[in-house]
Image 1 (cartoon, rainbow, N blue to C red):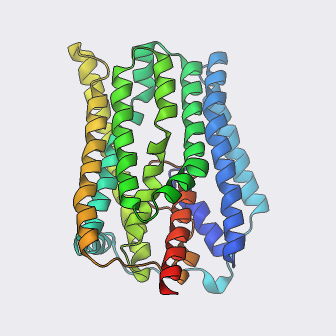
Image 2 (cartoon, rainbow, N blue to C red):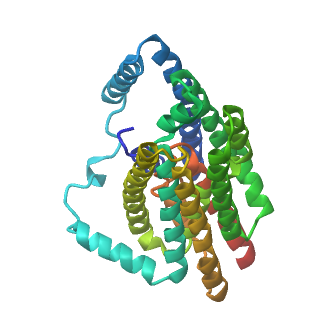
Length: 344
């Protein structure tokens, strides 16, 4: 994926399809393929590492080479010459960042939601950066065992996006900010439970019970998207993606440094999980002023044209590269139905 977090694939689908029905079908196939890969790839890597420690890398290189050949031979340029961008927009990085900062600071509600997204990314990245080393240090897991637990996490993620999230949206209709806060609190409880887990079986139990936490990314993204007008959706998507990428890097440094310090000082190996839980707890706390600001102000509803153009885009889904965009798409459609029903 090259670090694109499937944003390129999403852009291609949006540009290449002309109707919302065709676009939805294409995204459905994409997310199903991603879900299957996210479940099967960790398990395959865990099995290959038992054969030879470089086998997973050779397998990844071979699959990437096959993908390159498929793209080069069977995927010609789909955009006509007239629709290709040949000139720079003239908008530099600094001016883009300034525009993004102005966008989030002019709406207090949006600012708090973006802050919650960044803090949750910090916490999750701090855990993911040392997840393999921590599991080996605490539970003595080898590559096969780690591959299996990551594959189990992939199953819970797919379950959360395709089954649990639509159910939660129906239950919490009109209270999506409360749903986002609940999902962030589930993340807080998950990292706390990891730190207190006496054995590997408790990790699997925690993974299953905390599936709802995986719904936080699309809910937060959609909460931010509905606070922004149609013309600023691209700025929000790009700015939030850059912000989450930066917080990923910071979170990885924080998690790895705390974990390394705990090993050097002879402290408990799960100390870094306290910081992960703290970041997610702070993210949940950021939802409170955002919800208060939203309750006082007039909500800005989505428009049909915006949903048609932005459906499936997920610039904020940097933490979870799997089918989180589908959750955002479901939220947009639900809000559009509510808006049309109210207008009627």
